[in-house]
Amino acid sequence: MQLADFDFYLPDELIAQLPPAVRGGGRLLHVDASGALHDRWFRELPTLLRPDDLLVMNDTRVIKARLFGQKESGGKVELLVERVTSELDALAFIRASHAPKPGSRIRLADDTMVDVLARQDDLTQLRFQRPVLEVLDQLGQLPLPPYITHAPTTDDEARYQTIYANEPGAVAAPTAGLHFDDAMLDSLRKQGIRTARVTLHVGAGTFQPVRVDALADHKMHSERYTIPQATVEAIRETRTRGGRVVAVGTTSLRALEAAAQSGELRAGSNETDIFITPGYRFRVVDALITNFHLPKSTLLMLVAAFVGLDAIRAAYAHAIAQRYRFFSYGDAMFLERPPHEI
Image (cartoon, rainbow, N blue to C red; front, side, top):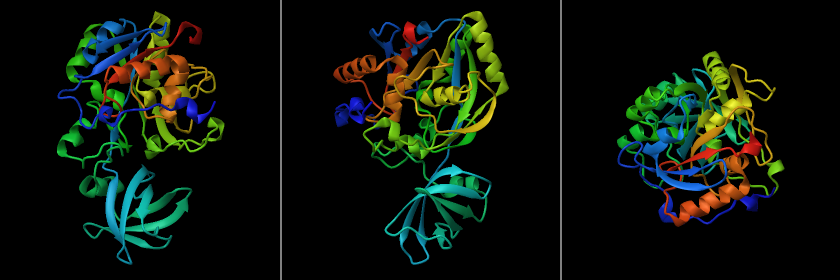
């Protein structure tokens, strides 16, 4: 398939710049297994789920990954930590008039020094003088997506984070989870719907555009994930009861599908650069809760693989016509795989 197959026009005013007034206050476009479209509100989600279903959520926590500093020459530098690789080490994207060379140092706001170790493709290996997460928490800025135009606020620090975020390491939120509040989770539990957790630390690559026309030539950024044994067992029990595995977000789906590439879902931690495009055979996930994605993005390709390219085109055209709000702070979709895909 070609990149142009995943393009669409989105009016700027439909890009949500702020979250809804309350969590779960947005809309929900239901694409059922036949491809029919139903306009709903997110608070109606429990009516779309069954007592034996299992929601799998990504419990990654967004870190304050953006740092500002100076090179030894005095030039300004912006760092976006893409991944924390050890207590003192990280990989980062660097923005500067001239990229700092390996062997040089960067001075951060409180005179903390960062050593530039080496280049790794479009990332740079950095070593901090004290724990990376400590530095980010004290000096970092929340890395809002590039299509959100305001500077991060204290409200963003709360709302660009799921209520069940636990494992620090993401530089972008698993945005489908932003809709859930405690009341919704309590309602689902009372309905007999269980939840399970995975961890996938969302990297900055989620915002990187596809720059090649032939999808087969695109290389995904690698991301780290963990599948607990308890989640594997919960999925096995769900299958036994005839329930569905419902991924909350494309990140949860990618973690589950990556861990099942051998044909059997396996617990553990690993790296994945899985690229899901139409024609992919899903092994684990039966339904997906997700936000709307950018044109020509790998995530749009994933949802097209899940329900079919024609169905996703129709859904997006409908969402635009009905003035749904798009992207991280926007509205959600509930996608059910068509019968021939299960």
